[in-house]
Image (cartoon, rainbow, N blue to C red; front, side):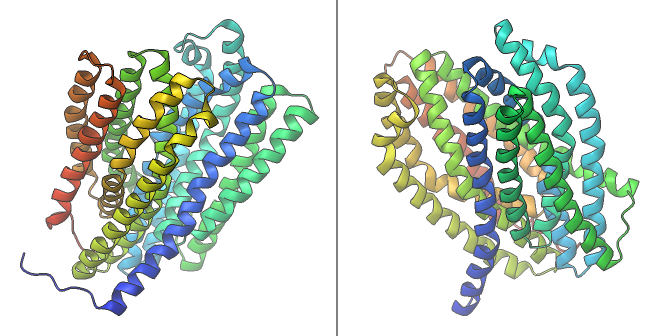
Length: 446
């Protein structure tokens, strides 16, 4: 490829400002969601343990259904950003509107099927009858909010593609504050119990979706883009999303392998795994903020046909990802001895958690690079490669995880997390770095 020209110091500073402009609001929006979910759990938790257990089951089902549709945000961000970079604002908004319509087309049947199969879905977890009743009550109502949730994903993707991460932040904070207030009023004020929590969440999601769609519609009207669904455009959005769904499925399957491995090691290991993975996921939000900036910036520069600038800003964002990973790794290692008592009163969990978190901390810098490059390739529309790469990562990681728990060793949890670091994060780094160093993903134009 030849020797690439380094960006001047002034250009690098401008790139840094652009990355921070998009990443900081994205990070705050990403962190707001889990923090407010903790408030929901606290509100329901004071109703009783069966209610909280029911929320855990219902939440797992809804989060899985919505998580598989994350392509509505990622794919829309990439396609809209490309057209913005190509100078086609009207086409960008039309593409975004198609993404919102696709969210509706997926969300409505998902809600119908979900409501109809609520009891069966809950029974898959094998809860006792009391917990099953609470889980079914919450889940049946929560499925009514799936369509607004998917519309929120698509509309957020549109705004990110337009290089606007501030509006999703404002809506995320406002919607979640409303969610807390509604939950308190409906659960305790009107004495609706766990059903009140689900209703309050549905109302908050509907309001958030309406706010985001209003901003998108105004932008579309300003550019003269049609608000009607364009069936070929909707089909293109759906087709582009297939590869990202496969990518997401393979990544989630790898995390399930981790959970299954910990369960085979006993209750202490399972509890430790839950705490460790919760902390790892929270730190992932920090790294994912740069990935979201990468999606928007990469799509825009490729749409403008500027391959040299795309390469320069990618290298810049990788450095940001690496530094962020170093920071989160150091922070996790320093906090490891003190985190156990915050989540568990079991000394055995405390003792096991510290070395597990230290292993996780070692791989944080690599994870920082992985998240950024994943965002870059999503922004480039390189979903097919990401799908194949996800399958390769799952194939490499699964046998390592299996070996770590069957070999006779009292440090099996440490080996499991070492397998996660090397087999999951390390393999992802290999396939993503290898791809990023080539030119096949840098396809210019809208």
